[in-house]
Image (tube, rainbow over the protein chains, first blue to last red):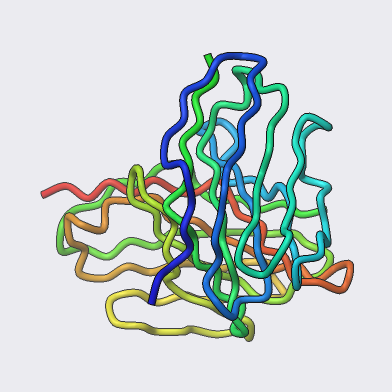
Length: 112
Length: 112
């Protein structure tokens, strides 16, 4: 059974460029979460979806960040334009009926 | 809002027992999770408490006191592979949906 799949695993880009991170949740999970992890701030919840509908995006830091979930098997997190302070590991996670979160391997973003 | 506190770092000796504490404040408490995260990897589920008391799972146990806003994770017979960060996470139900808010994590170093 495949877990949560994220791509890319690593991305290095220059300030001002658009970044798109992708996530495929576990089949049958109806919640999808995007988290960001840094040494300074730990694991922060950015946004989450229930049945493809965004429920709470209060954690999205700025308008430069946007997330979509066009169907039950795919979500994107986009940063445009990117800035050096966006450098972090971005995790996608999906949730089963017990409430346990299953995390992807993360996308490590470096903005120069 | 939510507030989750746990020690930043702990050290322990192989074969010993260590207790990692977590205190929390939240308006819509609906369960507490512990996750383990090895360096460079995704968090993985360890335990879940929603009622007061102790939940035991092999070498790991987790305790919850809802009235005190307090939990601990107990690790017995420590092994070197237990060196990792341990994340306390509170499930918050305010707003009608469940979301998982993480503490900053406790880095545990196990030495011979």
